Length: 349
Image 1: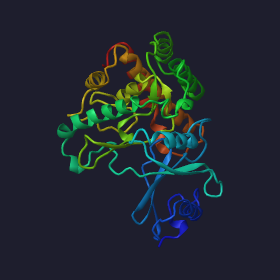
Image 2: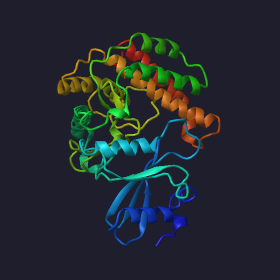
Image 3: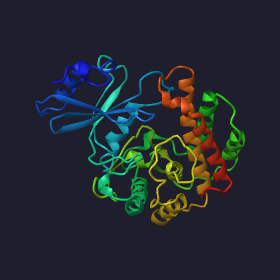
Image 4: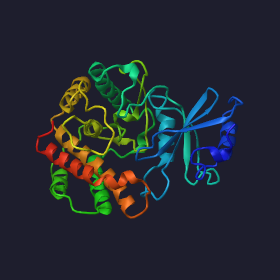
């Protein structure tokens, strides 16, 4: 049996106290040793698989070190899931929340483990070739997004997670501000892009739940049938607003073979996956929504992704984050801003 000091990140997490809390909160857990596995942490919250025999749960906590104000709001994510999982089955069921500093220096929560696979840059061997499964995965992410947008957020008592009126305007100005406070060097075309995002902002015609980080590697797919989505993860930034912002983000993350380095893991750049244009058309077909302003939302999606990477680079540059990956983000950031400018001039979709 492992001792507490042999668990992952033991210098930040008191696994003994955490195990005690879990057993008190969830009676009936098998009397077996706690096992801990850390998932790929990406650039965001840290996620761990905890198991006692066949009982499993997932722990979510903010990253170590200094983090931006209002970022990584684990309590908000837990509260959203508490209301959402009952009306959108793909949202995991949350189990418990704690901000006990004796357990770890940051607040955290435990949730249901959605069984399946998360696809980053490699397809499971059980799926076969990209040509075979690419269309199924492409359609599945569109379908699962539209199902979320069909949820009646008023009946689900989720009105308090966002302010629909003025959502897009606030989003655009908020992300521009985020970039201004994390800016480290001049990048050609950014000023013109920001002016365009403000001036060409389309009117919002409806409001839905907005996930705000809907992308392939936030989906849990059936391990044998990629057309079946078993779960949707990472609800920290969910709100109420313009549904087109979510499809814009999906397409920004949906890399193609001709794209430059975007600083993210990709699998969709392989033959067989839909192009961004095909994804947009599939969304229009399934949702019935007008996508005449899709270029705007995709450009904004690229802009947001560039700002996310810029914030990480800024943290690394000033010594607030010890992660060598962040040092290599300058080129992807510039590439993403360029992709946004190409999109706004109708050269991407």
